[in-house]
Each structure stands twice: as structure tokens, then as C-alpha cells.
Length: 326
Image (cartoon, rainbow, N blue to C red; front, side, top):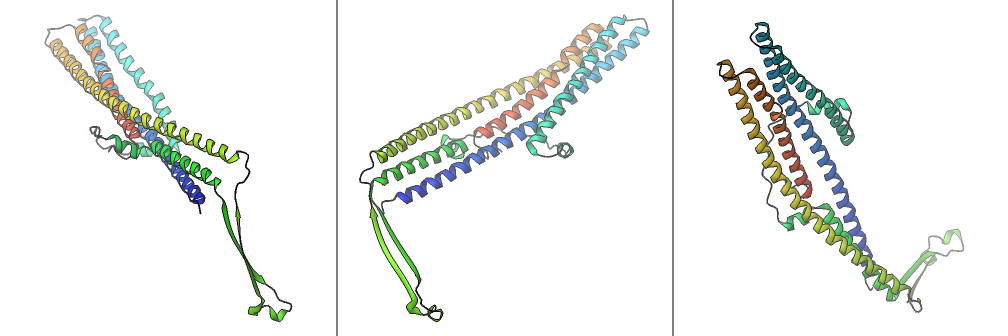
């Protein structure tokens, strides 16, 4: 009569909503980890291509230095230095294998699939990856999407319902009970209408002397509501901070990727120009080797920076609660 059962039902529904939101948060975190691992795998493939290009260039320099050494027009030191550059590229290739094994094991754990299945999925043709600009998201959209904010709001609603239910325990409780049965003195009278008997009774009970127990429960429920409100406010500020940080990370990662790409293009062009000048007799072999050494790993750095930019978008997607960034 006084709404205690309705308040308890409202609290149960709010707790159910909070559990669903937390389950969604776990799914989003799992998808983000899988996406980041796949991006790292693709980035490793791009880095490997760049390193193999560096290795091919270094081996060509070593071959040319060997030819000049055998012709007696260059010292053996040029060949040794060129071979050392090629050996450095080979060691970088070997180092990638340990990273690839670590990523494969992580994907096996995250996807609950075998290593062969994961490798087959990763071996599928990779479409040209696009890096979309970060979406313009309002705080209201952010608060509506973040599972932790939704869960905190549901916890606050459940705490409010618990306080309402505790406050209504001050009022009396009305009970209405009834019973129906059979009263027969013979087998033949069992199905007789006059054998049906019933009773209907009502009762009322109220807290006369509770020695402060109900007041203490109300105070405890009120404290729980205040704690739930503080937790909700903390979740809101955490969500806003995560989104702000994620937007900043995307911006800086994009700037780093663009700068790394420009650096790689400039160093590769310098290496080609040095080689052309060497073939024309306008530069010595040391100049070519130094230009090649500067260009080495620039492509790998650019590929790694591009991978970080794509990973930053996964972080932004997770910070926005999932489902917003495409």
C-alpha cells in the first residue's frame, strides 16, 4: 500500500541494468584488445616489408663494394661496412619473429581459438586500411554510450530505490490471506459442492518498538545512496577525461605518423641522389653508405608510427563507449 514492494522492484531492475552495462563494458574491452592486437600484427607485416627493402639495398651496396674491391679501385673496408649494414637489417628481421609469436599467443587467448585458426584469419587479404578523422562527440552522447557511466547511474537508481524501501518500513503492513479446501465425511461427498470450505482473513502489523533499527537501516541506505552518487560523479569525470585524452592521443599520433612519413620520403630520396652522384663519379662510396644508413629504418619507423595512429583510434573507440567510431 505504501510502495515498499514497488521500490524493491525498481531497485532490482536497476541492479539488472547495471549488470548488463558491466557485461557490455567487458565485451568492449575484449574487442578493443583484439583490434589492437590485429593492428599490431598488420604493423609488423608493414615493418617487415620496409626492413626487407633496407636489406635488399644494403646487399646491393655490399655487392657493388665487393666488385670495386676485386677490381682494385676500392678498399675492402667499404665492403665490410656495407655487409655490416646488411647484417643489422637481418637482425631486425629476426627480432620481429619474437613479437609475432607474442601477438599470436595473445590472439589465441583473446579469441579462444587455436593457433592455426588465428593464423588463417590473419592471412586473409587485408583491405586498404583507412584512418578516419575522429568524430565530433558531445558529452551527452558520451555519457549515453559509456557502459561504466550507465552502470553507475543504474547503481544510483538502485540505491535510491533501496532508500525508499527502507523509509517505507516505518509504515504498517497490511496482509490479506485466504484458504480453500474440502471437508467430506465420505468418499461420495468429495465432489459435492457443499464439501468446499474456505476462509479469508486480514491482518495489520506495524513497527511499535523497533529500538531504532528502522532508523539505522534508513541511515545506512542514505549513506549508500551518497556513495553511489559519488561513484556516479567519478564515472562521469573519468569518462570525460578518457575521451579528452583519447582525442589528444589521436591528434599527436596522426602528427607523428605524418612527420615520420615525410622523414622516410626525404631520407630515401637523399639515398637515391647519393647513389646517382656516386655512379656519376661526383661522390665517394662513404657518402653513399652514410646516406643509405640514414635511410635505413626510416621506413620501419614510419610504418610503426602509422600503426600507433590506428591503435589510437581503437583507444578512442573504447573511450567513447564503443559503437561511435567507424
